Length: 105
Image (cartoon, rainbow, N blue to C red; front, side, top):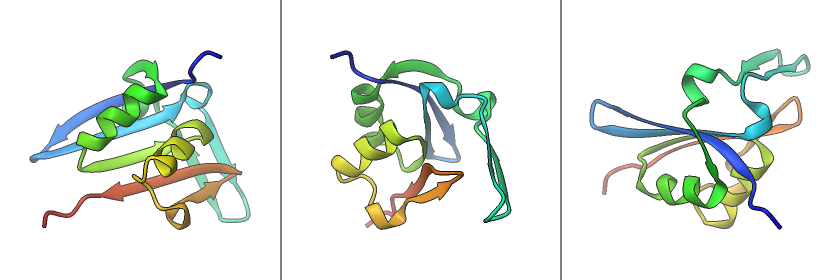
């Protein structure tokens, strides 16, 4: 079975490593959740870096200080790897979205 692919973009801003990842099929999608009053655009400029296997994105996520993840594949992998707590995931129009920040010790 072929590994799922995700779009991943790594940015460095003021000493922070920000990793934005979305499932391949979600790039440029507009998630409209009328119940929550949210319109979420999975913007190509923010998420549209390189297309990589989920395992590579998870490896990079371990090095990042801020994560922004959208989609079943990447969020489930991040939960499995202990990078995201399941209760920290919100769903926008049924699609999982998680953000994390690593605080210095």
